[in-house]
Length: 129
Image (cartoon, rainbow, N blue to C red; front, side):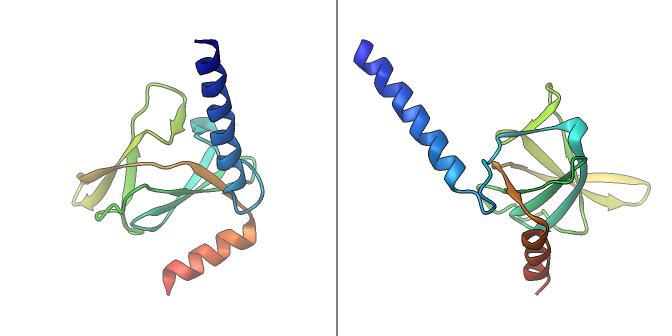
């Protein structure tokens, strides 16, 4: 039992290390962002969203699967019982119709990968083309 516990700790550490090395800017990816820190949300395409924070950071969220109804012209909504938006949370895409919004579908989020200002600008440009 002792060896199994050590093995699980080692696997957990290695998973965290792999996640940290995946980042474009060399910073560790995050599983959650504080709702109070989210300033603006930019939908790039049906699988990529950038979250701007009050502290000046940009975080790219790559959804695990494409979300067909996710589009730059649509709004998103999320519900959480915590004060954080996390990689396992679900977003709902909203279509602006008449005097209100209509749900278009829901999709799961991925991890939040920090990107610098140049990478953010390049991502926006690539998605426009």
